[in-house]
Length: 549
Image (cartoon, rainbow, N blue to C red):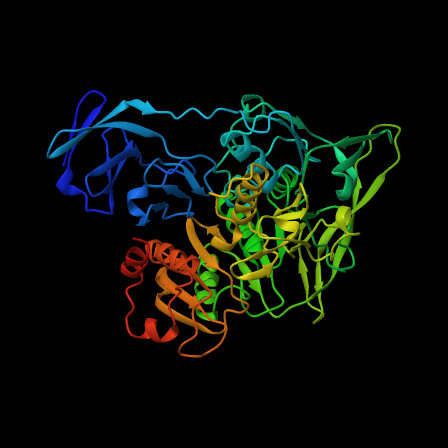
């Protein structure tokens, strides 16, 4: 039990199992997390620094404390960051051994100062201000890099949290200032030269050099000791007639989100695409409650059909329909139709007309009226700057994201070697993993895991419900379902085939977060459960904890 005093909390040792952890919520809503190994105890701020989850509700596997929400992972001995999506480790508190109890002094923080004394005479040049570029720069500074860091971005904003555009910003649940990664003064606080609105016109990997071009056509060459290319991806524009009309939008940037937010008021909205971006946009706009109607059009009979089974898909469809979303399935959009609008002229001016969206016409001939159309039709990697050295489907790099000596390609453009094979994955958390791995490679720090010891993870937020997915499966068709998706309480495992001894390669869940964390840890260690084990009532949480001790 706990006894709250001024700045101190006393906790009975008997409350905490050996090799385990426990969290204690305080009257001021703070949380203290205690970890134990034999007679050694450590105390931390128990809220995940990413989104505030109670880490005591997560899972401890060996010396890994895994957040139940988004799988940020911390070392149970010193709180250091092992896995994003958090961008920093846990605050550690001083702790006194009182015999049967331990006393935590939350006013006495253990701040192990990081001397920025490594590679002080070098320059790291980062192209791209997304998750991968940001995390590379941030991790370099937080692990002792003392050289010059320049981050170049085509965006007009400092690095920000793109996933929250469709999860929270469009819904009106989070302001623009809350999306900035590391806060508004991140670059200054970390001595990072941030160059915004910069277009990189050429990358010369053999020379660790880039060329930037300004609006006037003036060029500038920059060469660095370490070159990191993280140019991200751009929305696919399908070959639909009328896709270039005013009133047709994609969502990739803050500017895109602002335009959609402003344009959708009192309008009939059509979303083309039933992947997780299309579904998140539908959810966010429905929560904002400012549109006249929302219709989602998909080519298949399911939503997120390449990710989850038909049963889970049907539960998601029902969730959306209950919020007023209309669906048109098994449909192909042939044309985005246009209407002419007349602008009332001022005195002595001629009438002006312009074209904008009037709706969509399907291959079946059906026409659906609309005022704006949002394309949720996937993205393609921005590999053009490196197309002379690699396949346009992804830059071939090793499990340290290295393309050449001192040259790295990461994030959405990287086709990287990892535990699950060579693949390119367009997920935010994967891009942040890439940043951590690249920073360690630059610093020649072999204590940090390469991609071989990391597992892909993503989540989608719809109407406040978070569907989480770990691993990678080629298809959701060979699956095993436990629980009831209709009540938003299930976990589903995915396999490459139907064999009894086949091991699961991925899993998704709503409401069974600890089980997904346990699966991720087993998958990471090469011990994912087989179909036969799951059929036999395999205790996945107990097994993950046992294997990690």
